Length: 199
Image 1 (cartoon, rainbow, N blue to C red):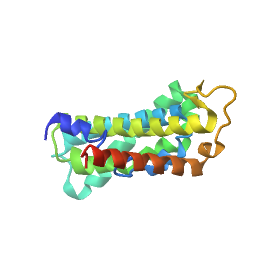
Image 2: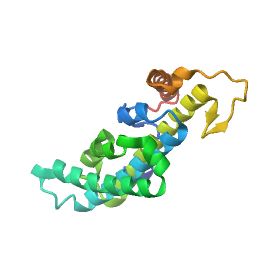
Image 3: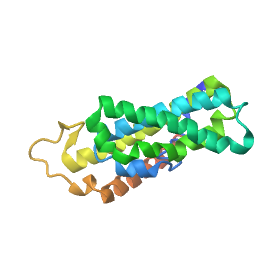
Image 4: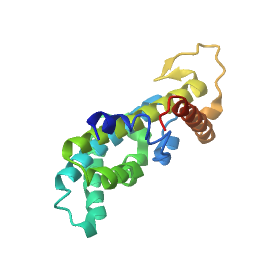
């Protein structure tokens, strides 16, 4: 498998949110604003990239019977680092994301990539896979957050897009709006995937 395939599958063909329907808790919970989606996505990408690197390096040294606990310890270490960095340098964003940053530890995308890819492939492939999946997750969350913010507030990244006369659809600022927006965007992604044969 080429490095380009390893990278690109996470963006479209195996997009964690729109195609594989993984990581739904943070996807629905923190995407009320585009900046929250971007922050959560980049935090997850940092953990995914770092944990894939370490797991791939140690893949032959980790005993088969305790591989999952070992993966979780490695992932939790990087989650703690990301959490502390966010708290120190982006306290407002850290406050917005709340409990969902520590919960990256149990995000099925990260553990799934560790088990399915990083534990079986060389370091470079594993890092490229982690970067592709992480960026796919980041783009999905940011796009969903931007749509919800635009419809719910008339802004994107807090910049007024719709003008003073816009009457926002407040439902998109709340959990039901997250389900509606995500469902429509997933439907759109499936239509595009079939049209361009990305199945």
